Length: 591
Image 1 (spheres, helix red, strand yellow):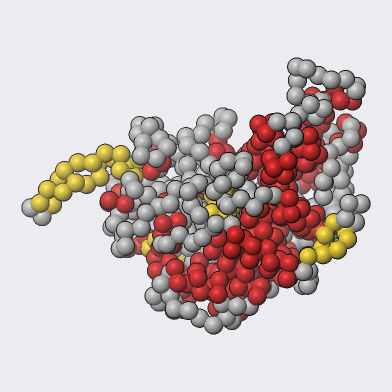
Image 2: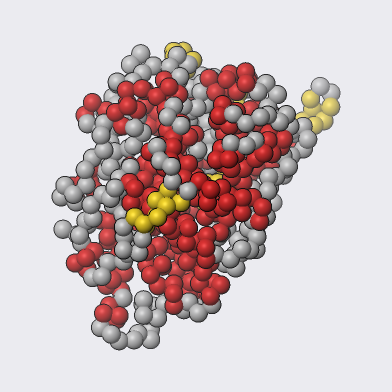
C-alpha cells in the first residue's frame, strides 16, 4: 500500500524520471536542470511556503489553534454543536483523526523542503543560494518544531527518497532528542549561511524568512526543549544522522543578541498599532486615546516571522490564503440587528476561544495600569444590547480577544440627527476592513468568511526581548517591553518574567508551550474551574469534563493523538500517544 506521507515525494519522482535515465530534458523542469537561476530558487522555496497557508484552510486542526484553546487563558467556545472547539480546551477528542490534515500538510512541507535543500546547490548566485537554502532550513525546522510540540516523537525525514520503493516505506517515530537535534542543526546552519541584511532588505523580497528569524526560532526551540525535557543544552545532528554536539545556552543568547542588535527589528511605538482594529478606515469611528494607527503587514518592524495571507480567497482553490483564524476567533453573535455595529470594529465569526475571566481579573490585579489589557481584550458585556447565548454560544464569558479577530470597517455612511446635531454614522459595514480600496480590496467585494487579508504573527520582536531576559535572567529586554506599555521598570524575577510573557503575548500562540515548559500546566489548567460562563445563555461555571483538566494533562503531557489513519497506514509502525483511549472521548456538556 502506498503511504500517504510520501505521495507528494512519489509524484515528484515520477515527474523527474529523466534523471533516473541519465538523460537531459529540454522541455521539463527536473532535478537535473532545476533550480539554476535566482527565479528558479525563489519558485522552489515558494512551494514550501505554500504549505503554511494550506494548513490554515483547516485552521481548527492546527498547532496554533490547539495552543490557543488548550491553554488556560481561553475556553473552547463555539456553538452547541462545535464540540471540536470545546474538546481542545478539555484535552479530549471527538475524532481520533482530528489532526490528519495538519499532519499531512506539515509533512508535505517537510518533503518540499527536503527537495529544495537537496537541489538548491545548483543555484549559481551564492548569495541567493544561501538565502534560499536558509529559508528552506528554517521552514523545515519550524514544521518539525510544531509536530514535536504537538505529538512528541514523530518520524524524522531529512532526505528525499531514492526511488518509488523507498517512498513507500513508512518511517518509524524517531526519539525526540533526534528530532530536536535535526531542528537545531537546520537553524544553526541557516544562521551561519544566510546574509546579514536588515529584515526589510532581504535578497529574496518582502515577507521572506531571514537569519534573524532563525535566531529567534532557535531561542523558542531551546526554551521548550530544555524546559519541558529538563535538559541543559540542545542536541545537534551529525552528517551521519547521529547526535553529535550540542548548542548551549550561551550560544542561544548570542544569537538572540545578534537579532536584537543587528536585525533592524524594533518595537513599534504603540502596542495597539500592532492590531488591525487601529486601521485607518475604521479608526475615525473607533477613536482611541493617542490615535494609534495599524502598521501594515510587511512594513511592521516587529514582525520577525509572519505567515502571509491574502484577500478574497476561493473556497475551491485557495481557501488557505485567507486568515481563517480571524473568522474562527471572532464573535459568534450577541443578538440584535445592529449587533456588529454595536461591537464595531469587531466582526462576525464562529465564536471560538472566549477569554477566561480569570485572566482579566488576574491581569487587573497584577498590573492595574497596563493599557495592554483593554488593548487585547474586549468586554462585550458592556456593549449595547449584549445578549448571552445568541446562536447557542457555549462557554461564553462576554470577553473576547482583539488581536486575531474579524475586523470591520465602514462601507458606507449616512448623516443623522443626534441630540439636535447632524452627525455622520455608519450605514453599512465591510465584514473585513481589508475589503476597502484603502487597503487590498476593490471597495465592493466582501466575504465575511474569506476576506481576512491580515498576516498571522508567529514571532514578534517583543518575544525575542522576553526570551533574552528569561535566558539571561536580566530585566533589560523585559523592561523595554514594559516601557512601550508605559509601565515602570522592574527587577528580574521568574514571576515577573512569566507575567510579562502572559500579558504581552496573550492570544499569540505562546501560552500553551510556556505553561508546559515551566511545569505549571496542571495547576494553570485547573485554575479555569469555577469561572463564570454561559452555555446557550444559561449561567453556569466551568467544570471538569471527563477525568478533568489535571488528570487529562497528567495522562497526555499535553501531546495530541496521532491520527489513527496514519497508524493504520503504517501497519503499526507508528504508536499512539498515551492518554488517547476511549476514556478521552468527549460527549457533551452536562448541565
